Amino acid sequence: MSEEATTPSARQVELLEAAYAYALTHGLADLSLRPLAAAIGSSPRVLIFLFGSKDGLVRALLARARADELALLDRFGPAGRKESIGLVRAVEEVWAWLAAPEHRPLLRLWAEAYARSLVEPDGAWGGFARRTVDDWLDALAGCQPPAERDGEQGTTRRTLALAVLRGALLDLLATDDEARVTAAVRQQLTHFGGC
Image 1: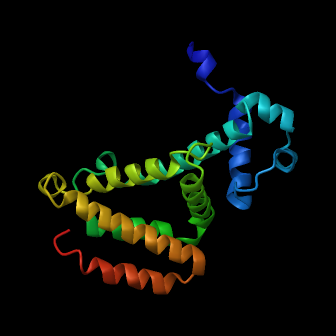
Image 2 (image 1 turned 180 degrees about the vertical axis):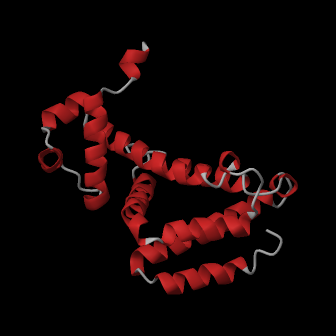
């Protein structure tokens, strides 16, 4: 396949960005092409032509959301740091980003896609939850000093850090009680010991 065939057109990129902005506000669970197309200045026929199907559009939107997630994770992984910062500091910095109100639309979309991929593992959502777990574990590994990262407890500590972040995020999205949830994250970090 030639590079031209795999490179999205300017119109496809433009509509994907507009559809992504729409999805951040409206979610993806009950996505209907007609209202989406009207909201972004297109038609269902054009969206199907450009993305192959509604599932193709959903996959493209999930990939776009994942790109935002990966951009965040790059700030904490080896590419974004000259030295490892340790899990405690990484969790503090990631949590500060997650707790910021301006990131809630993206995080709600992430939670929706994560849950949907668990109940529809073979559809357009398939694999999203697993990929995001792997992405986060890889980024957290980059925050650990090599001796810890490569040691017996490295994976366990990364998994615990991820569990704290994910649980706190879901609680925050459900309640908007940032002060309470942030206090809980900080309390848990005191138990990380040498992380």
